[in-house]
Image (cartoon, rainbow, N blue to C red; front, side, top):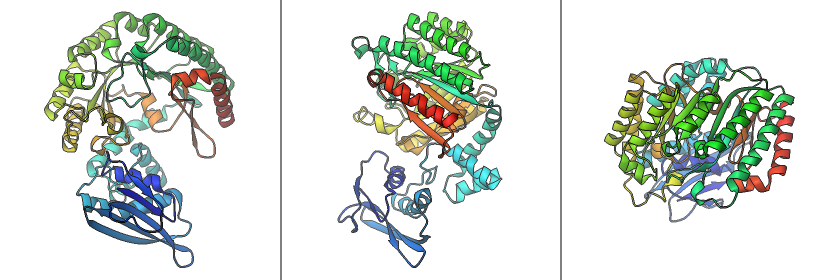
Length: 489
């Protein structure tokens, strides 16, 4: 299928819209004046019209059927405004020709709750913003209600953010092995050669010291610390202890701030030991994740998870015995070899274990499809049923949805939702997903988001891979420091 544009360059949004209906397909592109011949296409052509106006002509051709709609637009309509006009014409055509009506309507962004908040601030009414979600953006009643509920739960968390507060994200992009569904930057420890990991940790220690000095110079206050990956507990007990000591020194240099959250992703049960859990407790870590992803052994095996369901439960119970009072569990809807019944059993077992929060992800097909091409995959209806069951069951058990984000090419075009018992919501997750706080990233694969600058928020990425991080370390640190200081001074 071809994405065709003429008279403008808004290809990205058109492709994102088309992927709501054909998530696993690769598309061709054309900017020729003539329509693609003899094939399926999605087309948006912008032509001059009478004075001060332009004519937008949108066509969709699928399965031999074709639809066409037009609109007159002001000549000044461009950028995001033009994206919206194009989507408004193409979305109904795609719904009609495919018979698919995405639950998030024509929204393609990853932060729908953030968008709803902006609508509410603009109109002065959450109710009016939710009406706009339904009527203009075609979001379903159920997803609009979900976004509205999360918006209300997030308000006190956002309001409690300290002045000049920042989040700190520390990246350990290493895992014992790589899970087959993984779309994150992570490196298999079992395949690493030489001194990559020790050298990485040594350089990251330098960056931690530099970051502490930067935070002091700019009079910032650390609000949350989140150590993610990868799997931070992949580190040996000694390596983990050294890292925690470096973080403690950073906090000391910055005045020992009263953190709202200090999370470390323990993640993979096969990396969790009693010794490591006790190190985390002594370091003041307040929240950890123990992530089964599924409580079905056949699903875990297909996903390349080298642990059983019982292993995950045992490590969760060990963390409780060590004294952790805020534990998150992750599950993925749509994993290969899973079924609606199997997923229901996984959620039921999680509820019985009673962790403080449970996050339900939907499989992102973009990275996983090649791995699973010979394995049975749940279809969109099955994934939708899994997500609906999780929401109903978790809310009945006293959990509330408190943050939400979407990814490209997600199963059934759905969403990832974090559920928590009241008082156990993760401020880091809320502030980061809402773009409401500066987040300073440390390490390879970590992104820094700075509130400020002409665009309101600037995103700075050091580099994606550890070996690049090591090779370019002085250059990266100089560039990052200069950019942050320029934005926040």
